[in-house]
Image 1 (cartoon, rainbow, N blue to C red):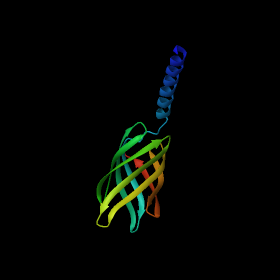
Image 2: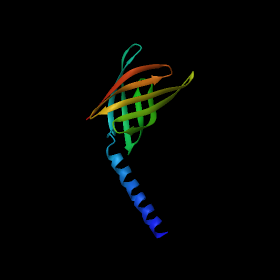
Image 3: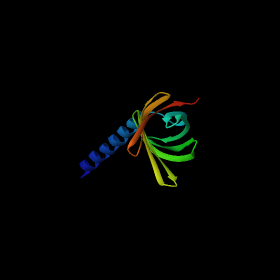
Image 4: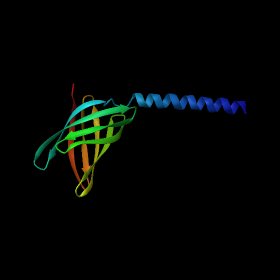
Length: 124
């Protein structure tokens, strides 16, 4: 019984240490980003404000349609987040995925069956 308790404690310590190492490898994305994509009528620029707690992110995206909250994740250098807006035609969902490379992000946003490329630069 004592041996099982020691093994269990060791596994708990190993799991905790491994999860802390994994979090340290997640890209740091907290801050303000200038985000660009191609809209129907030309380039669209928005401001992405991100708060980060380990691999979880949340914040707001602000543009021509106002300011909307989002939630998502960062795993390694992969970022994903979802923006949900209420419109007269119902809920409009945008699913963003991308790759973080230092102070820049490049990715794709999916809106229903459509998708577009997007990019962001960290503001300093």
